Length: 159
Image (cartoon, rainbow, N blue to C red; front, side, top):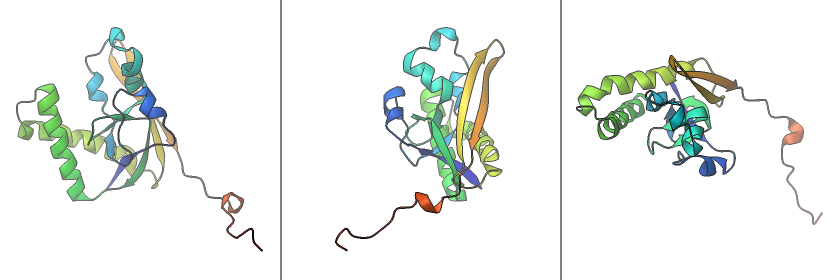
């Protein structure tokens, strides 16, 4: 099974998201967070999170880029439990057990998005708010072959 981990190329996510995800944490789309939003909610850092933020399932922070990678089944269940607990604490789900199905469906959606891509493929999300709800589009950035001239040359200046 594949899922995606948060990846940072620079410090920009630390400046644009109210709560940035931690590098390496597992991520899902997290579009559910915006299901009841209107145009008035789309301001500042909240707008940035809405427009292009993946949701980290450990810190529940946001990140711009995620990288596809393999995940172990035991990790999937741990993520589902954590996400279900988040649904109870933040969204008022009646219990972790009641929220587990929705948590697993969110993880499955992300897994399906990742399954067709090679490891290290980068993904971005773009969201729009319309009269019919939140629409998500995904961009895929495939890993490029490393060129020999891009590798560091090792040696000493003493020779």
